Length: 184
Ligand SMILES: Cc1cc2nc3c(=O)[nH]c(=O)nc-3n(C[C@H](O)[C@H](O)[C@H](O)COP(=O)(O)O)c2cc1C
Image (cartoon, rainbow, N blue to C red):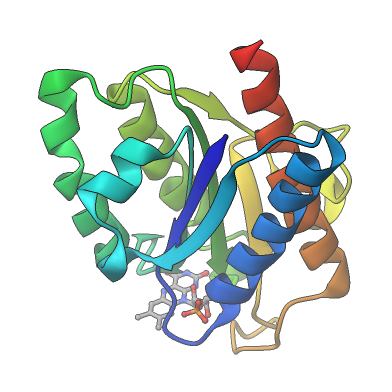
């Protein structure tokens, strides 16, 4: 079971969340004694082969001007090659985003998550949201995936709460568990 966590991050918030997701994913491989890998990689360093190789793709982005950062969109568009061959069909997808919280209501986080899901669905993948029963739903869960607020009331950087990192770990575990269930 191979998982690829691809993200963009300018100021390391999204990177830290990606690492927490990876920790949760790795814990599931260990718990079930399953061989495999969990690779965490900046979008600009992700190759088509990385995507083809992975059974699980988890994509994450900071919210930039109300939607995903262009670096993630570039990766999404790079993957368009796979649509012709159906190379990503049946793989499991998960999505996450960090956001400053402009306006207090997310400032585009849903748009970013749904945009990433749309790509996975177009590729014929099976996508994971963030179930209400999962640890951390009230802190950083939203139906579409993991949404971590990093800004204060003015939208200025404040950092990532411990509860959000716990939610990120839970999300990584959940996506891997889902992949294992589908593979059986
Ligand atoms: C160019 C730019 C545009 C942004 N636009 C938004 C936005 O529309 N809504 C929002 O809530 N946060 C916005 N933010 C805040 C970031 O989403 C937030 O700080 C994020 O956690 C940064 O992630 P990073 O540290 O991984 O780069 C923006 C930040 C930058 C740099």
